Length: 389
Image (cartoon, rainbow, N blue to C red; front, side, top):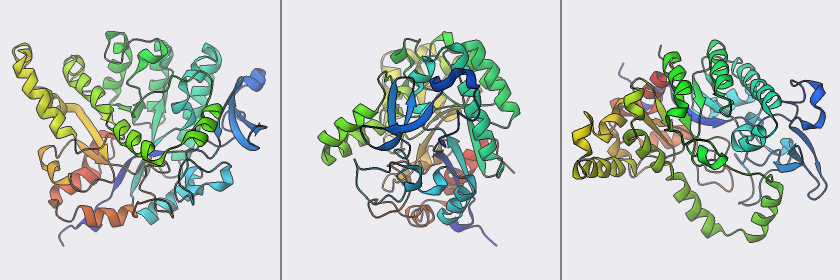
């Protein structure tokens, strides 16, 4: 019997886990007291917020808007307000079955978004908190090791500790590393600098992909105040434009990867641009190639930027339809994602334009050649994250 779209074991290459309130307080040494990231009632809002040191952050449920009943900027506050699949692994698997997803790659929320605040806790506590998160996500994924794929958070502010943690996480079954593309915002060299070679070299040796989301926070004062400003000044029109442009911001990182010499230094390393979308990237790569030749860079390199991309760079897309025919130009380099349970996710609800992922796939991929659909929905992710049967 020939394969059809409905038969594909779809891999969601970008999903997030909402950290439970006791993640760090239950795993980190008690000697640190309230310096450990914890949840407390914010007297200004009356809701449970994360708190790191003196910094109030977003409410516990802020990032988990899957199925939410209100338009932004109004978001869930308490953990009980959010879809249970955001934080409970058993419920996550049920949601994946409903969505028609075989597997999900798992990223953090708090420790990924508020990394500068973790950095400033000091070398010992920041490392202990990082290890605690990686232990947590390992246990979360252990609910079904074939379907839940953990990505490591690394203490990138300490290269030796980062290398050691990568090796530890690889032994625990992690398939990739959460990296960032704007380290200069926190006073570190840019991600393409040779400063990072010890981390990238180990990632290449361990066959762990380097994964980065759009943007990189440099917050120092927490997010509770920013939330109040957003609520008072929110514009749906401006938010729509800002989000669309923000999702395309990974163009800078992708262009840097394929032109900076990174791919020459690490020819076997896989770079994954998460949340980038797809449709604008064929143009970007065509433009890079044209100017690569026009400025004489082609005389200095054996490969064009698009050829480096084809060899070792990957992008992720989710809601797109009109640009999918262009996948035939890069059939081995793009992967499907849902970004569950975030605002721009394939999570249906009363205030979301999203369809069930299974329905979206059956409709949007109807005219995409099946062999390309299989790669975009399963094969490429299986190769990048070591999931091949």
